[in-house]
Image (cartoon, rainbow, N blue to C red; front, side):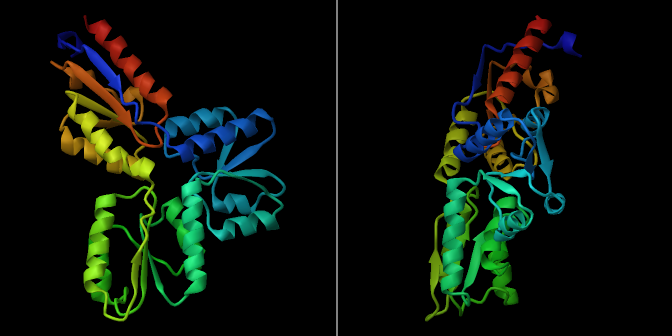
Length: 303
């Protein structure tokens, strides 16, 4: 098949705005610094939603564990990733004499504190979190409210909760967002709540979406429009990756999501002049470079 394929690629550009966000960069740096000291280092959950980067750090000695496995550990070091953890995790570490290497993103940490303060000050109010159910960050946020917070994944969930009475618009509502959610959808939820809150009840919203992440939406859309084909490099478990790839696909139908260079299909580049490579906040730069090198190597072999 390849011997019949002709490519005219003259430009392959890696998006400068793609790659690790500040929180992920800090978490990986902390892991590398600890591993360099020697001794065992555990990480509670995948340090980043990217299988290739997880494997690289695993080879360097990082051991990924879950909460059940952490309960069995005593007197070790455990790194908490950028997503953050609920208070129960810190309590477990104290009981088991575990040293915490806390790499919680400062933006997430600030959000946790705000939600906890709100809950402590007014435990009867309804705290709503716009986020993905079961996501590590969201579990950490819900944990600040002793699991009383209500999670909504999308705009339609708010309407459904109102209809079923699970979200009472005659009582106070305080709305927060997971740091990596869509700004546009968050504003739709705010507008709906403002329209339906009963007189006498308080509705307040707090824009807690990380701007470093939110700004990637328009930036990646502009990048996707510049090229004939887009390779979006991201772990398929990444929430941020799903949002950004959807944006790429809406702008450029010739967008393909891959996790590694091995998934590249040279047939995508038939009669193509420009290729753009971009990724999520959990995508390492070295992986995007690897994809670029693979295209160059395969294109040369076809000539």
